[in-house]
Length: 374
Image (cartoon, rainbow, N blue to C red; front, side, top):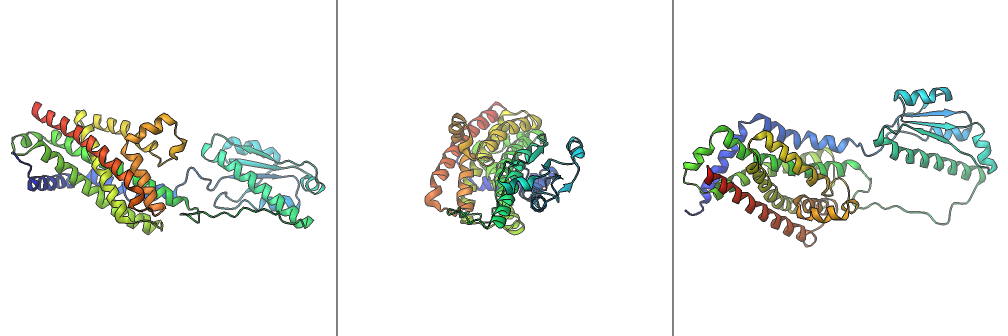
């Protein structure tokens, strides 16, 4: 029996009808490519945002007033002025993450050129803010002291200054990175889930037996599930990229959107094949869900979307070269952040094609064996 592309097309349309009757998966698709991307871009747990700061000002000097007024939104909420006896209580109740103590005589010591110190108490249980925030508090305070001394002593500015030029994200807007990386991770997650669920849905609804008696090849069934689910994810990606990332988040996409979508298509070839492969290993949807969690966690966390690959241990970094997400993240960042062309990203495209071919071959072999056993 020869491969019939018309059968592949009709079987793919059947998958769309099955998906249309599944409100849970439809809701997941809509949420994942709209609200989830927006929330991930606008919520910044890794950066300092509206940190609670209390200040104990025992000096009551122009310098201490200048330091107090330097902590402004969005990094900090307006600082609350408290007494020294209230400092520990504020930290114990969780009302403040930082308590800055300005001792009496601080300005006098600074002007006299003697050693002067500030005390910073930090609630280290709030790890997302404690480490980053303590550096912010220190830099702001030291900057205000330096500016105060320069104004009082009429000191000449330093001969060497640092001119900062940020490429690709001049305003250092964190939502650009968060929104795009969330979209990249969601493409991987949804393509694996939809492709695997399409196969398991056949078993649970009892339609797998119907396919066995039809004049169709296992390859035709597999290709139908892959292209139909990939088309759904591709359409959702376009909507999220243009409507949410470029529209709501106002991110400037540097490179070619068509080139990115071409790379996404290669990535979907690999991830939908992975979803089918996991579905052939699972006996039902609950077991498939557990396998998806075990597969997606390392694929997303070690791909470079969350942290640079250079920060990953060497052995893991080399092993992750066999994962499609590593090359897709590299491709996405190069195109959409830095405006790279095909001459830069072709190695990542070639790697995605090779990984997809291996996963597709493994999925087809297991799927064919399963159909023959049935």
